[in-house]
Image 1 (cartoon, rainbow, N blue to C red):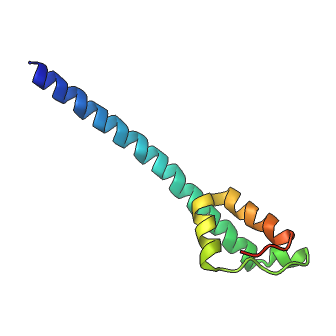
Image 2 (image 1 turned 135 degrees about the vertical axis):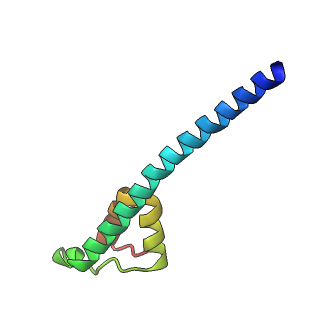
Length: 87
């Protein structure tokens, strides 16, 4: 009887952990897509050239920063570019 009860508790724990990870993964994926879309918009409309700086470009580093960091990653890249630091 205790073996069955232990198995049920373990199954419920695994399902709860999987549900939590899927929810967090969905939020991270949405943030990454929004970051990449913002990078595209900044480069497409040449927003950085409006303030006299070169565009951010699509290097491997900028794409990874935008994909991992999302919207804050794009803002960090814009601020770094404004201060003359290119990534």
